[in-house]
Structures are given as structure tokens and as C-alpha cells.
Length: 212
Image 1: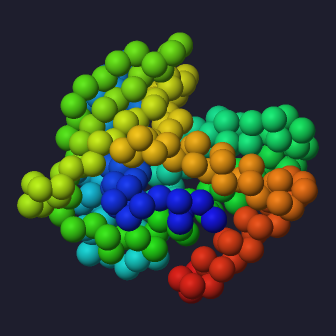
Image 2: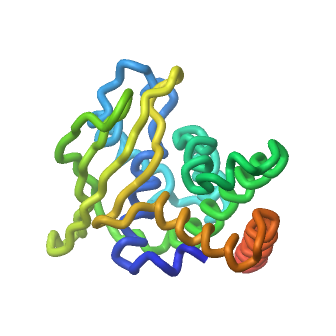
């Protein structure tokens, strides 16, 4: 599901982008924080605290889950990914999807911790993106300097501070990729319940592979 749609270059960049943003501490969530500084100032902290930290992979995984749920707007992402299916779903189904989607992200990307090899993230610019939104453009560079990945962060201002709605790697949107993939699964299975069933199977498989 989904992750196979990302080339290895994009997958590496997305992994780094997820960590680079998610590691920002709570005080950086002030509503008046500059979004470009918000992304840039803590990118190295994310790498140090998780990707390069000398701790067991299971602990890295838990840190990632905590950070991901704190700094990404999961309900809004879920509404976008499911589109019309979100409105048709019951509150219980919506809650179940959000929980399963969190698990899919955490268990899928925690398998890729070893892909980190000293890459760094640098913020390039920012621009307005709709109402209460900002698009922050950045670049992830390899240790050799010969390989660069363009990364765009789609942020929205919430009462508690900035939240991530999407990350775009070299023109590939994480949210749109999941949206297309899940719409295909719903079409194939014939129902939203079919998607939830497939997600449950994916999570169970990922957990078994990682001994979670």
C-alpha cells in the first residue's frame, strides 16, 4: 500500500522531512512563530534526537509517534485523504481510520530509520498558502553535497500553533499519494469498511515484522 508509490529518493527525503519537522519542542508551537524558522531551527534537533540517537529502534519509534501526532493535523489530513468518504463515514469509522492511519505512518516509516546517512535540511523560502497557511520550501542535501531533494511543507495556523497538512517531495505529495491509494482500495473492496480492513491487515503485518 502507498509506500511503494514513493521512489527511494523521495522515500528517504520524506523520512528526513517527517523527523526534521516533528522534533520541534512544544514551546516552538507559539502562534506567532515564524514558520520558516519553525521548520529550520529544529531540523537538526530532529535528526539528533531520533535518527542519529544511540537508543533502541523501539524507543525511536515511540518518540516518532508522539511527535507525529503532536505536530501533524491528523483529523484534517484524514478529511483530505478520504474526501467524500470522510463525510459518509460514521464518527466511529472516522476515529478508527485516524488511529489506523497513525499506525500506518509510524510502523511504515520506522522501518526506514537506517536510511539516514548524515543528510541535512535547509529552509530556502516561504510564501502564503491560502487562509492562515504557509508553504515553506526547503532542501535536503546528502553528506557529499551531490544529491539534493526539494521538500515543500504545507502548514496551517491552528489555535495551538503551526500544524503540518502535507509534505511534498520533488513534486510528490504525501497526502495526495495516500488519497489516490486509498480511493483505489475503496473502489476495489467496494466500501469504506473494506479500506479499514486492509489497513488493519497492513498494520498487523508491519507490527509482526518489527516485533511490536
